[in-house]
Length: 266
Image 1 (spheres, rainbow, N blue to C red):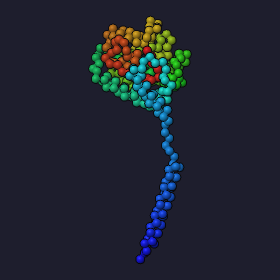
Image 2: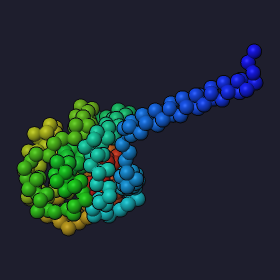
Image 3: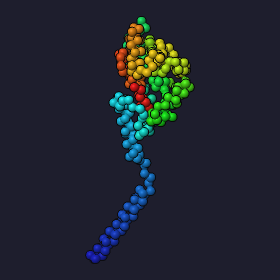
Image 4: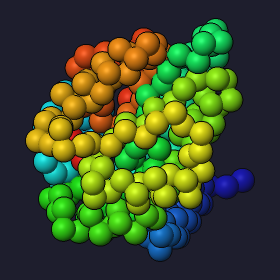
């Protein structure tokens, strides 16, 4: 039989051995964890800027921020990602789907007087390549740089809006393209650019004439829409990327705002 003293010594020895093994195991775990690479985290500043950019863009699109001149610098990366990362195209697709759902419910009359109005810049054709060079609107607008870009006639079509345009034509609507570009200086290049990008079969391309020089976009476009209605057309829809495309008189039965956080035309 073991004596009590011997039993106590065995227990103490086993306890010491257990504690030693436990410490060695814990040391190995901590060492492995220490050498394990940690996932990179966005800095608080980057997260805050992106959140602010999202809030600012929402406020712009809902017309709560008005007559702004430049994109806030802290929104630059957010707007860049939005315009070039795929979300902009997805938003256009969803909006065009909604427009076509509405348009398909309209019984087009045989008299040829059912009309739609589409804006041109950043609606039918895009200026994103230019605005990349202007930090997506963080830099102030510079007509001395913008006009040479327009004169290249290289504005690409917005594919979703081209889909809308072609569907409206096929349905029998008369499509009017209405732009604030000046007829005297940008008329021919605009016609050629639209043609080259597939915009064929519209009823009329209306550019700003000398008569409307100096007028606000709202006043100018209201006057043109009124003239179209006075010719007997019924405007079923009005599509543009600026709130000034969709304000004023003779707006039509429905208006549809396309996203554009790069600039504001009042």
